[in-house]
Length: 168
Image (cartoon, rainbow, N blue to C red; front, side, top):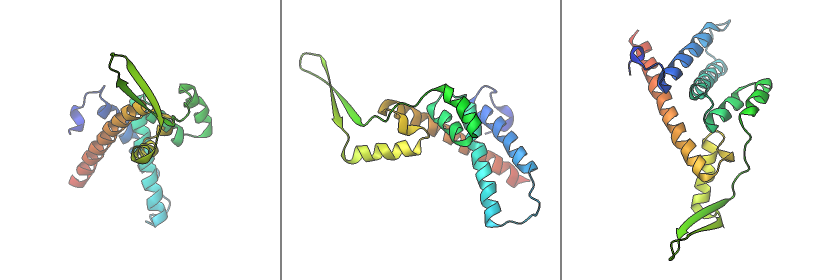
């Protein structure tokens, strides 16, 4: 990936611009003592991770539930009230819907309680995707696919930045 030849309207370009700006701000906050204690290393890691998550969520432009949930998690209480206007979370769907075709061509929808392996896997997926606990199955799968795409973009950009710094 070449950082100089990015399409300015692409997700990768928007994320790269925001993330580099955030890294510059983090780097400007030099610690008073140049100690590398585990606590300071963890705090720096946390700031970089939060900067990456925030940059990606803003790059999506609040069109996705996962980005709204990420921004909600990372913002202060005053910002949370403002972000709440983007939409309310629906209640957790506790049932599974199965659609089958009958012999006369009509569609029959059966609603059954989740049980067994699929329910456990869905709950695990809901925990991994920000805001996933409030999504039905279709939205969860759509948001998961988009979230994975964005995480892949994050990794590509961060690898490129790391490679550029290792060449210096």
